[in-house]
Amino acid sequence: MSQPTPCQLRSRCPADTMSIADKLAKVCIPGDFILLTGELGAGKTVFTKGFARSLGFDGLVTSPTFTLVQEYRGRMNILHADLYRLESLAEFDDLALGEQTNLAGAVALVEWGELAKPSLRTQYLEISLRVLQDDWRLVTISGSSASWDSRVQSIDFGSLKVDDSLQERELLRN
Ligand SMILES: Nc1ncnc2c1ncn2[C@@H]1O[C@H](COP(=O)(O)OP(=O)(O)O)[C@@H](O)[C@H]1O
Ligand SMILES: [Mg+2]
Image 1 (cartoon, rainbow, N blue to C red):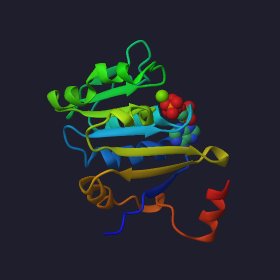
Image 2: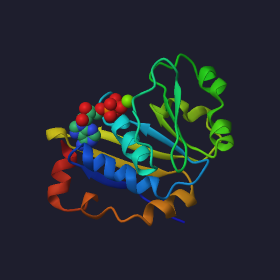
Image 3: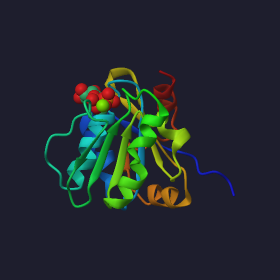
Image 4: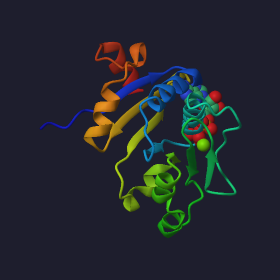
């Protein structure tokens, strides 16, 4: 079976990134793990805010700093982690985030999630944010399982979807 290609979206503003997060939140189930990758300022926390709003949490959403993980209570709870200050993989293992996520019936959103990959024993969805010119973002969504692939494919991203036109290829070159 051929590998499904990642889904590529174009975000022109923070509201677009939040709308992408909203659509993804609607197909999430307890125990899901989402890794957010991209440079500082790429929009990982903006994405998390959109995700939390979608699940009915309207409190403050910021990158956890003093703790590595914080919890938001909504229709489904969210464990929001930020590994920017992670000193070792053992420190991530000590969080037992996979177990916590399952126990809490929550979904985990992990900023700088690529750092956790060597330790992950669960399937995950990866959202990569790349800064383009004019503050646009290229958002690439790739799943590590058939369940994620089919859920992502079921979402109608409408005009946010990057198509194959010449103009889009120009955009990606920058
Ligand atoms: N298309 C966009 N998507 C997300 N954020 C954007 C976008 N355009 C501009 N921004 C700005 O970029 C910043 C992203 O910050 P943040 O989400 O905290 O980044 P990170 O968590 O990846 O370090 C915010 O100030 C946001 O307003
Ligand atoms: Mg952040």
